Structure formats: structure tokens, C-alpha cells
Length: 355
Image (tube, rainbow, N blue to C red; front, side, top):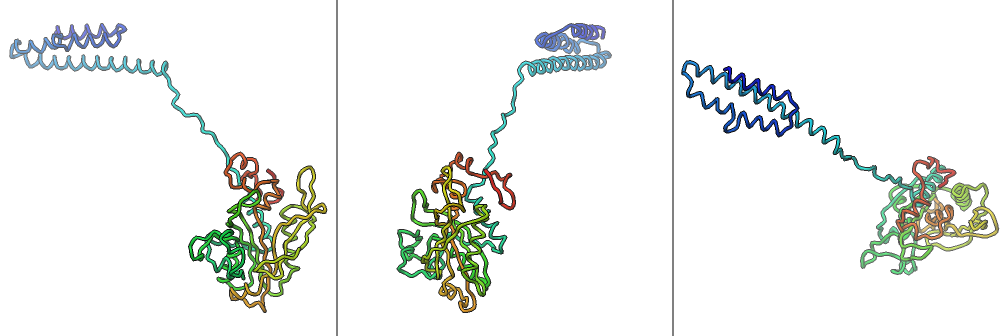
């Protein structure tokens, strides 16, 4: 036992010194290696007297466990210290840089639709919608458009089948037909949405946006139409006075029909709405044709009404100084960043807007 105690004391004495990992491993080999001191002690068990052998073996195992725990603890202590030192010297920033944040803008067309809807809602109009793919009846026949009308020609209309029964709507007037077929008068609606015609240049696009209005009730006349449009134009362009004239025209679905012109002048290269002696065509309108009312089962002897159609893209171009319709559909973020609207700055009543 004195020899085992001597081995333990020697180990504890060495551990008082500052040792590195290689020196600790060497001590471990000296104790438990093939010719290590503890290993040799186990080999001596067979030579010890039988009466003392059991106690010697027990003491030897105890010393062995103690020494192994001391050595392992020291190894762990040194390894942890080395890891801490490496972390201090080899620190790596694993965080990612902040991703760039770009706030989206409201497209001028979307903004204009919201403005138009807000203005008409103030005078009792509700908003109705319909599908982009229409049937020939809703788009043409119900609207009193004859079979030989140029609008039905393949050069103007995108037909989706050989029989010309399905097509991309050429205006949002089919929404008026759908509304009148499913309900009973009176009607007071606007129908904004996408429309499609085979045309493309600086002021025309194969897809564009329209808003159509319809007011059907008893004793409705052209005076109501003029008052409605006068109110809308002043509110939309944010002017107190507006010069407006009705010029006779023809549409299959209205009788009488008119084109509406508004006065303007050019100052510093900009169009000023409501002033000057020049005229600008802005929309088409008229009293709903009796044949249209008959096609939707409305008695024209009891109910009359007016309808109008306005190009939303054209209104946006006039109000916000955009000179090329094609830019609306180019998906150029630089253009949208300039002409678009910050969603956080748009007031709920859409008045006094600024970019």
C-alpha cells in the first residue's frame, strides 16, 4: 500500500506544476501504459499472499480510479482552456448583413381607380365587377351592337374560339348587362376594370383600363348626366370650375350619345385642366338606348337612365403628367418609383394627393 501511495503522491506533486496536454498524456502512459506503474502493480497481484491479495486488489483499483479521474479532469481543464483561447483569437462573425429593404409603390392606375371609386361613392354609386372573359351576348348583342359593327371585327376584338362566342371584353359595359340581368331597377353603379382591344401605340395598348357608369331610375334625363360628370371632373382634377361641353356622337348602346370635352390650357409645358380656350376629349356618354333596357328585361317606358365610359389610364396620364400609355405596363421599377404613390401617405379620402 505504501508503494501505491507513493505513486499517487508523485502524481499529485507533478500536477502542481504547469503542464501542457502532451505532458499529461505522457504521465498517463507512465501510469497505465503497457509497462506503466499501475499496470505492473496489477501484474503483481498473483505473487501476493492469498490473505492480503483481496485487500491489495481493492486498494489498487481505488488508487487506479482516483488517478484516472485526476488525469481526465486535468485533461478536460487544459482542453477547455485551449478552446476558450482559440475562441478569443479566432472569433468569426457569423451574422449576415441586413438585407436591403425597398418599400413598394401603388401603381398610378390602381391609385386612379381608388380615387374614381371614392368620388362616385360620395354620390351614391356602388362598384360592380365582372369577368375579363365574356360571351358575345353581354359584350355586343345586349348592348345593341349590330352584327356588322366594326367593333366586332377580328382586327379589334380578341376572340377565344372560332365561333366568336367567347372573347376578351372590349369594354366594361358587360358588367352593366350582368348587373341589370340579376337585379331590378333602380341601378346606380360604376364598373372599373381591364379591357382588351387589338391596338398598340403611344396612346393605345392591347390591354387598358376603363370605368363605366350606369344610372337607371324613373325620370332620369341628360341634366342628371351633366351634373354627375361635372361633379366628377371637378373632384378628380381638384379644380373649382370646369369648362365642359357635350358634342354629339354615336354609340350603339346610347341615344342620344355625346363626347364630353373639357377646357384646358398649357402653362410651362403642363396641361392645366379647367382653364383656357382649348378643348380636350375625355369620355363618351349618353342616355341608355331603349333596346338595351329591353334586352335586360327593364321596361323603357317606366325607366330611363344614362351611361358613360372613361379611360382610366387616360385620366391618370392627364392628372399625373404621364405622356406614354405603354409605360403603365413596362414593369419598370424606376418609373413606378417616380410616378407611384407611397401607401403610407395616401389619405383615405384620396383628396389633395402628392407624389
